[in-house]
Image 1 (cartoon, rainbow, N blue to C red):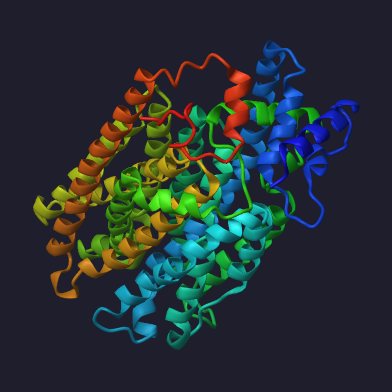
Image 2 (image 1 turned 90 degrees about the vertical axis):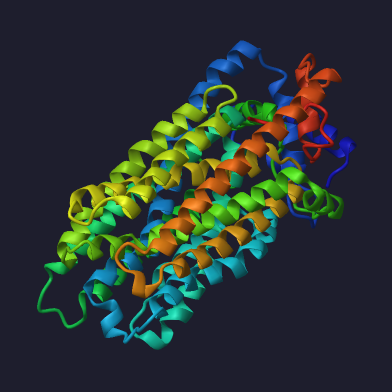
Length: 514
């Protein structure tokens, strides 16, 4: 990390240049032979912002936010849509003879379903260290090339390839959480995160329609389920070029911004009190993460949501088919699941923007899915469409999942601490995804009562833990308020402190979002 003197010299050097020029400020913060410390870069940009009128920065920040919303956010949404579509291909192809062609018996399909999450489990924590040191856009772009080029053509390689894809895809969610925290304010993050996860709904619709189309493709030299994999892989590979070239690592190298707009972008997120990125690993922050009670509440919630996601994602097709529908009808009946997810995830995202509403929104968004599970267990089999409606409500699961994902980014400061919390969080989330499909016992089709009760218990556990987490954060904020640490009287001092890579406990100005 550069010294304060070196940062000041960079600021003074840049003060002689016009912000409208193409000279990149971050080059002034680079130390010979060392990676760029983005917190030092941010200090240079923030010092520059102090030269401008606050009202001017406020007006220009709207333009910067719109550029991120209409250029970067769609790139993130498309990437996430393809990622989820890739995961869902197993579910959709299952209706077209995948198990029969690959000679799966008993619970082998459950193990193949879990293979991706075994890979994610292995890759989740190492990716955090790579994300700390290397540009997000380049890492994800390279991952897309490899992941899009993979193909599944025989059962002997099925588990191995799903495992490998899981290792690659493990970078997407934590990378986007980090990137969201660097480009948008804390008040904006939950809605933007909801947007890039809401495309799971679009993915579900496209996947179901793709499966429906594949079902009508007859006379092929390959089975219909393999056609689905080939189409998704080609789309992913092509999109990798866009991400590699244009997805930014932060405001400092966002190609859609002028140099002045980069100054405004850093000024915008200075109130977040989370800084940007520090390439060095700080052991003390790892220790703090492991001893933080709030982090452990997040870890337990990660297990609950992982169990829910793993079960719902991989067995929704089997449940609907078990109500007496053929493969084509089953594919069509899954399209409303995506519509429910798309609409409700965004709607709950808007609700979470209100003051002190993230925790409450997560609790409310759990209710439809829980009610749907009870309906699947209790409604008579003669009411098939009512049962299918209960399955559609499972699409709303995406809302509590993604809003819970935002909490480590919103309420954890210090880059090493945040990376540690995110790493452990997604390791446990993956463990839950592995366990979820194994709640579905083949001899209990089509209602799968053991699985439905287990998923309902996971919802109840997640809701109870969320209440405790929100209450804990409220008490922490109140204690800081009593000590007079959240007065906000010196904006410049507080903002500069946010770029010192302090943890949420060390930063006296940090406030937890409820």
